[in-house]
Length: 410
Image (cartoon, rainbow, N blue to C red; front, side, top):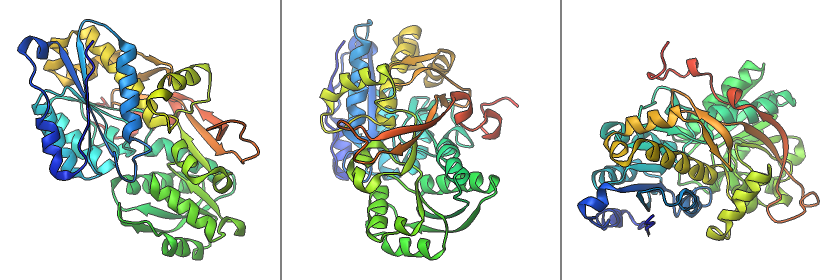
């Protein structure tokens, strides 16, 4: 199997150059080559949560798939968290022979790329975007949503906080599709449990690094819980600045509604201890997750994999198995048919174990409510989480008939 990795250029002006530099393959070679494009944030807010780690885990899946009678080529590029860059990149990639695009964090970009994939009848596996709209009103026959979404996060983290007494909330929300969806879904769970939302403030994305004024507003509301409807460096800065202000010492709880183990590493256990979050993957869950992590660590030596990284591995492996089952020619001819085959096949890998994909494109897996350990509780590198509870795959995500996906028969 041929495995070619080409560096995605980071500057906007260089994106087209990165795409047009894709090598022209001989007709016979092109007909027997599957091209996979990892599109994500390689340099900004979500770099550690997606970025090179997603590329490494996608490559790991290609390596493990091995020699199966066709070639696989991997490329990647930075969408800079800009929908227009993502759309232009997706169009050029698909037009130049990319068969599947994967990852695509930042919900505004993910939703935009989803439309291009639908138009081109090409496969789009979204791992990095959180918005549950991808399997709701914006579902598409060419798209699968892996690992997590705002409904799952809200149900697990938000629900647990309310049960623990956090019945009044104030949201600090990233002002774009992801933040809006996360605030919306969490508010629904808070209110359903008898809680109240006292207020919210929208923060410019991705231009905010100083959250002090927003934290002051949140504290002034006297809410028992401040919910951070953001991610990446935004969440890291919010938690660190809240600690500097001594907010938690006054009894206010912080809810990091989307936090990854890579964020915990940046925050540090001294500051992050006691924070509660939800992920669908933790490297130290069981023997299989530990084995996968040990295999991929040489490719990402400064990070341990999170649910996005693991999702890119899991999704790529399942996609390649579907291609093998269909044949390369059939797989290249129709993204819809590939996605249909992926939905018909059970999923199975070391990162997530056994699973399935629903008609709306939602990949089902358990979710885990996690608490960040104290420094004294952590016994080895990246030993950061205690598992508080798990939610079975069939209950973790929004019920199939409630999302409004046009692919679901009433």
